[in-house]
Image 1 (cartoon, rainbow, N blue to C red):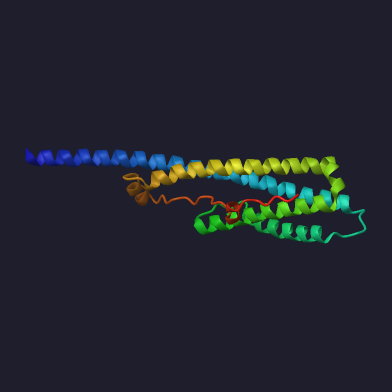
Image 2 (tube, helix red, strand yellow; image 1 turned 90 degrees about the vertical axis):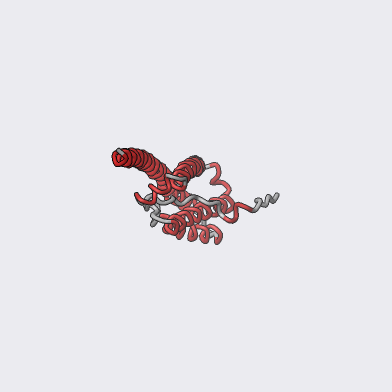
Length: 202
């Protein structure tokens, strides 16, 4: 009789562990897919920005073609934007498989954002009449909208990754996560300069 009780307890424990393992595994798979889906939304907005930047540069170059004087600031800013664009372009379709790859991609996109801002400001100063050009205004509006979409999608990605990482680290799910190979996902971090208040000059 005692033997059957022990066997019964072992069977019950095995069923409980199996059920818990299946449930945890399925929830981790769902969360992992949610993270990947949201990352693809971030990439869509990155690609949108990549597609708009060449149009912006062509518009400025076409407008400035009649100018006899080359503006050094615009030329320098264009070179910086081109370099940042190439760096970001090399990573825009990658799926980061670790913290280092994620950080490299994040740095490339942040660098592109900074270079784009410098370029647009240099163009505004060099070609003040361009601010009234319909095509330039349209591109600028689309770029601003894209930056807002990027911020929104990155915010959603951050929330989904947080839920996933909490699930992976919590007991007893962390045991099953380790067994099934589910590790934590990298997160976006604010750029160091974001901690400094902007300087406003008149």
